[in-house]
Amino acid sequence: MTKLQTTIDNDQLILGQFGDIEFGPWGIECSDQDGFITLTDTTRNAGYQDGIWHLPTGRLIIDLHTKQIDANKIAIAASFTPLDDMALQDAVIRLVFDKEAIKSGIINDQVFVHTNSDKYRLYPTKQAQLVGVSGHCITVTLDATNGAARFDPYLYLRDRDDHWIIHARLLPRDPVDQIWLRWANRFFTLSAPNPVARWVWRISPLKNLLWRMRERLGRRCPEIQAVPLNTLRKGQVLSLEVTCHFQ
Image (cartoon, rainbow, N blue to C red; front, side, top):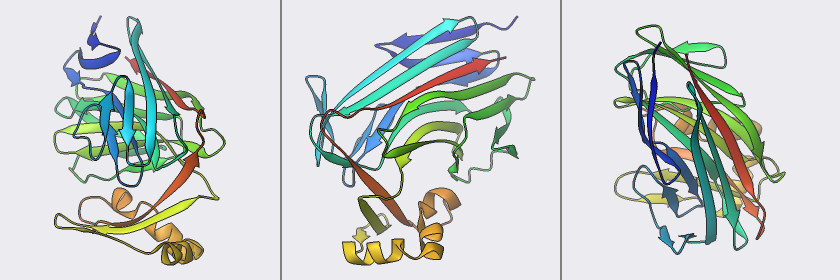
């Protein structure tokens, strides 16, 4: 029987192994228009002090709990509680797996191989899977969410560099409070004036095309997309609960 091995420190999975499949680190992400919180990458315009995250538009308390709950399961729960009224793009539980021992990924009944496309294959679904070269299967289930009636749950499957990435994600639902229509490159970021972004969002074909376009179309797409934000009131909570099953 294949043994699941994990290293969990301060409620965050640092690394793990199941047979020939290696994974980690796992964590959370959250962003407003100008700042980005992460435990596994580089934060942007964000700071952490005395248990509180500081973004340009306000302060957040983020709780993360990770536990191996039996021989073949890991449970992850995260909550995001603003201490100020603030507009957010998303709230995320992030899982990362090394690609070498994984043959394919499955989401929304579609099978994908790793091509380093960097596409966010994003769906309002409750399950994503990774199939190992040696026959092992990893199933990630989105078990519970609270979007504070302003955010809806999604999963995405992404093939980037040497990893498969799965996000459980809360994204703003319509009607949204803000639209960030932007073009970004390594030199600068240009944002459309709010009236222009609102006008674009009211035109369904443009809305459907531009909604997180760079994410959906991958690394060959220009960094152009429309990103909605919704305002959370002080004390409202966003939360996600995920289980990772190893077979």
